[in-house]
Length: 340
Image 1 (cartoon, rainbow, N blue to C red):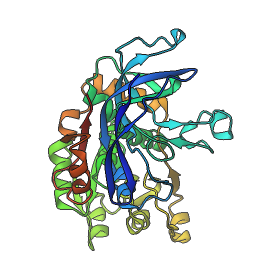
Image 2: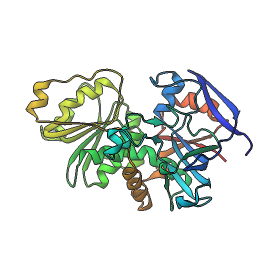
Image 3: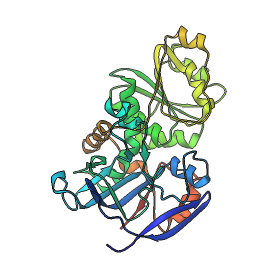
C-alpha cells in the first residue's frame, strides 16, 4: 500500500500535513479507511500544549468513522462496511478489564492521545475496537464516541423515569448527557456560563429549562426545584470551580456525577456531603455497551445528529480551521474533518 496523508501536531501550536507510511494490518486487526474525524476539547488542548499526557509529534483524532478495507475472515466484518471506533485500547488483563470496565483500564491507550489517532487516511486497529454502524451515515458514526461519553455518565448515575437532572456544561459532552437523560425519561435542566451555549442547547436538542451560571446560580437552582436541589447533577464543564460549586446543587439523597476531569484537587464540605448522604461518582470514557446504546438511539432517530454537527473541514483545511476553533467557539457544537 502506498503512503498516506496525515495531519500532525508537531508541537504546541504547530500543525503540519505530512506523508507517512500507510499501516499494514496486524494480527487480529482490521485495516480501516478513515472517513470522518470529529474534533473535540482534547484535540484543542493537545494543540495548545495543555494536555498532560502527550508526546509530540502526535496525530490527533479519536472520534472516528470509516469503512473496512481488510479484516480477518473470522471477524464477521466485510469490506466497505461502515464502522465506528471505540478509541480506548485496553490491556484486557488488569482488574478493571477483568471486571468488564476497559474504559478505565490501568494501562489504557487512547487513540490520538497516547498513540497516533485518526487524523489520517488509514488505521489498523484491534477488531474488538470496531463496532458495526449499519443504518448510520459516516457523519453519525463519527459522532457516536462523544455521545457515548454522555450516555455512559447517565448509565453510571442509574437515573430513571421522572428524575430531576441538572447537566452543567452545554458543550458536546454535556449535550450528549442531556440527550440520554431525556431518553431515560428524566426532566432535564442545563446550566452554562455562556449565553451562546445556552442558546445552542435550546436550538440543537430542544432543552427549554436553562440556567445561566453566575453569582445567583444557587438561587436559580433553589427556584427551579422548590428549594430541594436536583436528584442528579452531571458536571461536564472541565472547570474546577464549577465542579466544586455543583456539590451545592444536589438534593438530599441525590447523586453527583463528574464527567469532567481536571489536574487539580477537588475539595468539598464534608458536612454538606454527609448531610445530604450524597453519592459521588466518577464517569470515564465509555464502553461498548454505551456505544451500542448510542447507535441504537441514532437509528431510532432519538438523537438530532444533524443539528450537532455544525462545522466541517478537510485535513488540509484543518491547518487553519482547528487553531481558530480552539478559540472561536461561537455556534460550534461539533466539527468534522472529511477524509476521502
